Structure formats: structure tokens, C-alpha cells
Image (cartoon, helix red, strand yellow):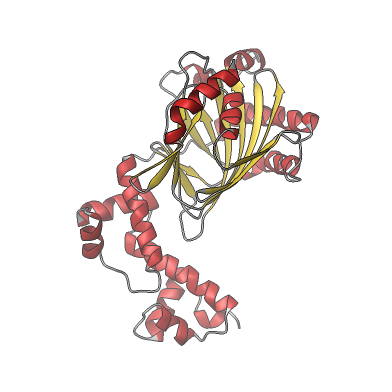
Length: 353
């Protein structure tokens, strides 16, 4: 039956596999259960499948990805998704109303970006590098990933029956855990990654999946249960990250502005007025929204990216400080050195000394 559902979905949605809107390529996939996530993803264009090792791959104009998956027991799955984004991509889940959609999801997020804040967008949330997300069943969301980012995620799916039998039945369960599952106003929570608490567990997931072959069932099951044990016993120590109140439309515009700044990294700061006119946003809103999203002013952000790149150039090349200052359009070496020191805490002349 499940494969009939996938075939029916493919027939009706094939022309919409990838659509383009407002700077993003949109990809849809069936999301009622991890089995449907896996099977529908494997049917998408450009996908190569290794059934024996429970993996599928893709290297296309949008992403380069490897996904490993395993059903540990009835109602419990683990996936490891490693994705390099070649374009801005948004994933849109689709739920078949004739089938159950009762899976919770924990996701361990490890994000790497070049010249970019380390997060990706999930509805009104910033998913920080090294964070842990909790998602309830059948929650619609827009999952935005930006060009140039690399994301490694360990995704644990478990259905309501499994949660009831294995988590919610634990004696002396903390009120925080009970509330997480029973409070209908909670659909999604993103927790700041606690290195001290989760480091070994995340290391074990990495070791289990790193060989690009079928994971060891026993080791994967042991580590998954360990993750649940750690989470349940440390939830009161975990910091829930606040959602970002900017609209998705505003955040997309700000990310386009960020990309514009990076494209002009070797030029002088373009100026608030020019950016405001280019992206049809008032100067006041631009300055406020940018600082809300990135935590610093737009000029400070631009200058920080310049100084980070300048440090790399000093370390990797035989360029003189004056030549690097000229590269970034500084009027003289003194002003460049002062900006460099303000950002890094030391003068550029100290880099290779």
C-alpha cells in the first residue's frame, strides 16, 4: 500500500518536484512517516540508491547529499543526512490525509557555512549550529537552506505508540518532559547544544555512520537509547532558543542582502541607502531587522567578514599588508590595521611574526 501511495503522489506531483519562488528552489516530499520520507525521497529525480547498505545519494544542480537510514525497531528510525547546498533550497513536507502521521522527531543539527552565520531557517526559527530540535507530528513548516552551507543531521523518528511505551511510561518522569509532549501549544522547540552533555553521544553517531556502509544495528540502537536517556535527564539544563519574530519573507530578503554583501566583500561598504533602494526596504527597517537576525549592525557584519577574510589572506598568501588593504579598498594601511585590530584584537603585522 505504501508504494501505491508513493506512485500516486509521483504521478500527481512530478511536474512540481522543483519549483522556483523568491530566490529558492522548492522540493516536496511525503512526510507521514520516516518510511515515506525515505521511499518518496528515493523516487525523486537524480537519486541513486544503495538498498543493501540502506543509503541513497544525489549530486545535482541543487544539492550534493548522502542519506543513510535504518529502522531500529517498530516505530523507531534513525537517519543521517549530509547535504552540501549548491543553491538556496526549501523543503516542503506533504502529508497524505488517508494515512497516519504520528511521528515525533529529534534532529541533531551540525551546520557549516562559508561567509555566513551558522544556522538555517525553519519557519520562524533559526536552527543554530550544534543544536537539537524537537518536532511534533504533522507540523507544517518551511525548511530553508542556503547556498554554500553544509549540514550534517542525525534524525531520530519515533511514533506516538513508541513514545508512550518507552518514554512517557518512565517512572518519575520530569514535568518538563511531560509538558513537552502534552502541551498542544508546543509544536517545535530548538535547544542549544550542550557540548558537555551530548559530545560523546554525537561522536558515537558520527562513528557509526562515517564508514558510508550499513550501520551496525546494535550499536545504533544503543546510542539512540542513550540519546533519549541523556535528553530526559538533562532537559532542565537545556536552553531553548528563542524563535525569530521576523517573517519568512523578511528573513529571505535579509539573506539576499547578506549574499549581496559577500559578493561585494572586496569593495567599500555599499551604504544603507544603496542597499535600501536595491532591496526596497526602508533604511530604518533594514538596520533594525538586520541586527535582530544577525546580532550586529549591517556595517559591523560586513566589516567583520572583511577582516575574517583578510586574516585568511595573511595566513595563506605572500601578500603584503598594504596589498591586502588595497584589496579591500582601504584608503591607507593605517585605517585597515586599526579595523583589523578592533576585530581580531591584534595587528595584522603580528599574524606571521
